[in-house]
Amino acid sequence: MVYCERVACYLCPMNIPVEDFNDLIKNRRSVFPSQFVQGETVPEHIVKQILTNACWAPNHGQTEPWHFTVFSGEGLKKLATFQGELYKAEAGDAFKPAVYEKFQQQPLKASHIISLGMKRTTTKNIPEIEDIEAVSCAVQNMYLTTTAYGIGGYWTTGGVTYRESAKEFFGLEAQDKLLGFFYLGIIAVPSLPGKRSPIEEKVSWVNG
Image 1 (cartoon, rainbow, N blue to C red):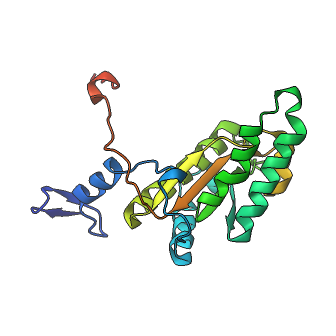
Image 2: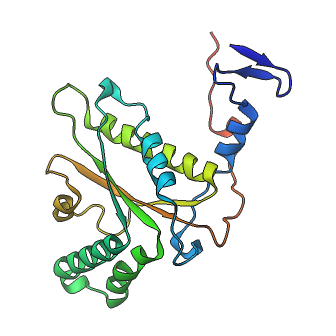
Image 3: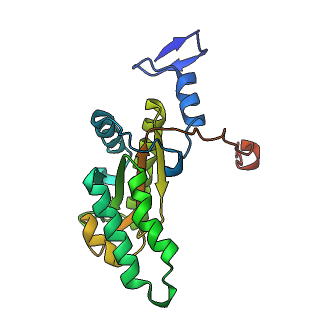
């Protein structure tokens, strides 16, 4: 370990300033599709780095239970058509034209959309919730990476996320789960500063 007087803290061997890391976490925000620059594309090397960092998330038993599908270009239209038609087919009397239209149009606002799949671990005695938690950690890595690159990211559990009939389209099987979608885009309208309650309201200490 190395002590750095400039930031008055201990640094890891990679010499990453802790203050910079703390600022990165505090500045992470959801950036919604309506805040993206329409028609601009996130460079492919950044998308690949986002996915690489996601795959370095902690996971019990090194099972790496995530499964991502990346939609871009014409793929966004395929995703939009799929979720719109699935909604139309299954909504029944609850069908709403405005919802159908949103399913068709929302994906087209993004540069890329990453489906967030959880592949259930069956070779080890690991509770399902721990596979879900691992994918959630992977998504946080995505969020932090988009923040570091100055691009927009948004995790949504809307659309067809919890429809069993949607799984196959995203390469998932019956025991797997679709946990949502991560939208990527170039930021046109920044998000407002975030707010958090003091840790004293959320933390209990047991000292002896």
